[in-house]
Image (tube, rainbow, N blue to C red; front, side):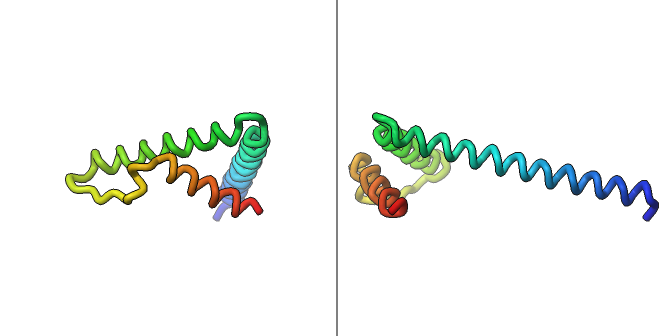
Length: 94
């Protein structure tokens, strides 16, 4: 490879490494902010609502993509499913 080609490859690699570092830093900051928000008043309720919304949305996607669907018995009790997920998250936190 020519010297110019080597320099171009080095610059590309350094650029990609910097991009990965910036994304990781932004992701870590976002996670930190979410963790702080969860600990504010009403934060856990907001998490429960978000989990329930995603739960329903994902099952809605499955229903659109498939002619036949087998649903878990707990689906009728979304609140129970959210509570189970919340308990799992709290256990993982400990």
